[in-house]
Length: 256
Length: 256
DNA sequence: CGAGAGGTTGAGGATCCTCAACAGCCGTGG
DNA sequence: CCACGGCTGTTGAGGATCCTCAACCTCTCG
Image 1 (cartoon, rainbow over the protein chains, first blue to last red):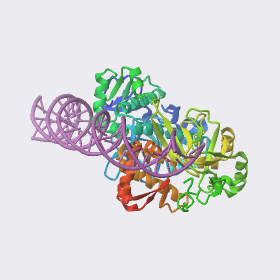
Image 2: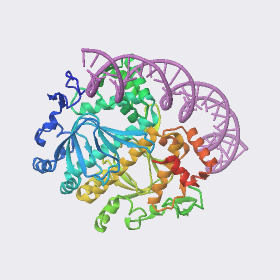
Image 3: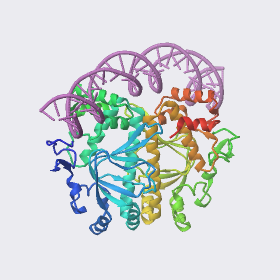
Image 4: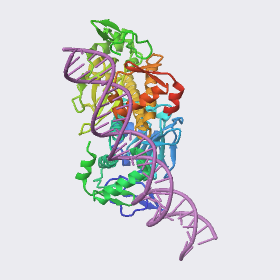
C-alpha cells in the first residue's frame, strides 16, 4: 500500500499514515513513548502496569527497517528482540538448495524473539517499511525475570503462535491450492480484525512469491488461484491487496 | 514394539519393559514417585528443586492409556495436563470432511497442555500403551504461579515445540515425498538419542496412515518410499520399526 | 478358520510444478 | 521526455509427482 492515497481505515493500524517527504510513515513509529503506542493493547506490553511500562519503555529503542531490509538471519546471535509496531515482517527458513518456507508473517503487535534463545531459529525480513521497538536481549531477559506477569504474557503469546503453526500445518499438509489461498485470506482477515479494522479489504504487502512460499505452492499457482477467485467474483484484486466480495463463498472453500 | 521380546536398548526409554500378564508395561509407569521417574531429567519437572518436586508429585496422578485410547478431543474443556512418561501419543487436527493432520508425536518426557488454555487446541490419542502423570489443570496453574522456575521451563518447552513446528512446516511445504520420510526418520532419531538411546533402530509405534497424516502424504506413498529406501539398503524394515543402515545416505536425502 | 487391520504394489489420473512468453509498472538514465 | 531494464504478475502448454482406486498379502486375534 506504499503509494496508495485512498487506503481506507479498515484493516491496518498503519492506516492514517502521514505523508512525509514522499514516504509513507507509520504514526506508531513516531510515538516517542509507550503511552501513545498504537499497539500497546494487543502486544505483550499489555501485561505491564503503568510503572513497569515506564521501566520497560526505557529499555526500548525505536527502530525502522526499510522495505526488503533483513533484520537477522537464521543462526545469527540473537542480540535483540523486537515488538512490531507497524508494517509486515516475513519469517522464513531456507533449505540448503534455496527452497524457502515462510513460517509466518508478523503484523503490528507481534513479537519477534519469543524463544529468548541465544540464536535466531529463522530469518526475518521487512516486507514493507517496518517500525519496531528493539530491546537488547539480555536486558529484556533480566526484565522478564523481574516481572513474572510479562513471562506469563510471553508464554501466552508463544502458545498462541504454536496454535497458529499447527493450523498452518493442516493447511500445508492437507489442503488443496484453492483451499490454501482461501484459508490464508480468512486467517489474515481475522488477524486484521483483531487489530481493529473491519477487514473487507486485505492489504497484502507481500508478493505472490511470498504467498507461495508461505502456502507451499509456486507463484504461478497462487496467481492462477487468485485469478480464478477473482473471475468468480469471490474476491477483487486491488493494488497491493485483495477485497473480499463473497465472504460466504470464501469460507465455504477455506472452511476449517 | 508391543510384542517384541528382543527390542534392543537403543531408542526408547521404555525398553527394558517388564512382561506382566502378557502385556508390555513401562517401568516409568510403575514409578510411585518422581524420584524414580525415568523422564525426570528431560521433562519440565527438571526445573524443580527436591522440595518443590515433592509438592508437585502430590498434585499428580499416574494414569495409563491403552493403545488407541483417546485422551481428549479438540475443543474439549481442558480439565487436565499431562506429562508423558512412556509410550507415544499422536496430536492431530481434523478438517470438517475428515482429513487429518497429525501435528506431532509425543514421546516420553513431552508435555501435553503447554498452552494452559481452557480448551484443547487439538485431539490426542495413545498410539501404544501410554503412561503419564496427570495434573488437574487448575491445580497445575496455581502451582506454576507459585513457581516461576517452572513457568520459565514451560515457556522454554513451548518455544521448543514452536521450533519443531516451524521445521515441520518446511517439511510439509517444501519437501518431496522421499525427503519427507528421510527427514522424519532423522528427526525421530535425534529425539530418541536425546532420550538416551543410540537410535540406530527407530521404533515406530504408528501406522503408515499415521505417518502419512503427519507428513502430508497418503499411506500408499509412504509405503512406496519406505520400500524404495529399503530396496536401496538405506534402511531396513523391521517389525514395528525401521533400522537405519546408511545414515549418510539418509542425511543426504533429508538434509536440512 | 474367518474377519479385520495393516501393509505392499500396480495402473491410471488429477493436481500442481516447470518452463516459457508476455504485459504492466516504475525508476533510471540517455 | 521517452526508452529501457528490472521486477512483479498473468497465462498457457506440457510433464512430474503424488493421489485414487483396486487387488492381494501377512499377521493377529477371537
